[in-house]
Length: 456
Image (cartoon, rainbow, N blue to C red; front, side):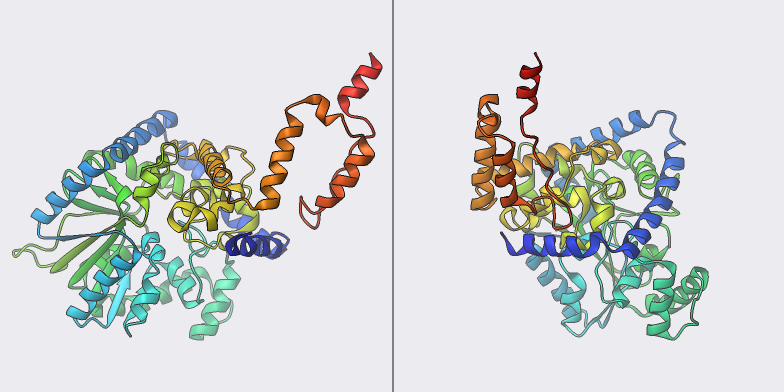
């Protein structure tokens, strides 16, 4: 058993019976479920919209190389610099280089899962540079010394009281402060940081190939200020974020908002095509776009699982997943949790170490049902399981046990070789197979087929 699998099982046991956590996560997800249900009602034909969104992303993924080169050509022509990073290490080295060359001391960063993927804050703070999250949810988990819990809602695991207590501890705000007060407090605090920051860092919801643009959608305005005030704008985006055309945004922005937050469209939607021009007064003087591979091309090379690159990070599959709602985001021990995380993490972090995540699934298919770009997620998880078995990563006991199971299940007569008593004795060898808090069901004295034949 890998170290990561042991961690996963230990965390699962600890959190799944935590009643406070369960109540918090279910309450918060229920709010999203209600909003998203209303958001979907705005579509006259939601399935048609999903079909079109799926086509757009499939087209981009299938011609990934061509569209990335087009994006690079167009945005470079507008004055931006493009850096291709094969992995996290190369991305961090390039970012550190920009920071040193510009003697930066303060970096403001908008919400970005890609920056979490490369552990941006840790590496930048190692240089003695302050890296400040500006999204409210990200800011909350940063001051708590935590990582994002959810792709869309980083502090989903915290209740209103938890957040109020955290702010009282860190900033001496009044006990039991209301969310409106805390939001206003953070807004005032961050405004000073925006205007004094040396570098602004964002991700990208989409890389728009035909215009060479960075499309960012948000609800707080922090990403727009991250771009507007600092003299340098660094974009860190996975190569799969590319879409063919600016026209596609009319489809992709609303469907992302509807499935992520239930909105018709997010409050702020920006398309940045380069640094400011000589005749312009606002915007960064330099813009650097880092296109991150980080084993995405390994995923691209898979005949089946490459479809996961269509993901637009709406978080719908997490909210729908019965496993995620019980074990929570931190149990996965990876940047991306839930169904999509269980598909892609084994490719990004290693199948041997993280292949077990693909078994954190009941194969109910709800994730596939809610996906706005029609990724067959539960099928991809089964393909991952297949790869784990074929490479022998399941462990000796598991692999031999599955071979024995396969042998027995292929013939009814083999299942009937042993009676109920013998089967129950063998079952005691794996009495905790369903977990320490569940009992193994007992076999009847005779199998159903024998009982049926006896009655006949």
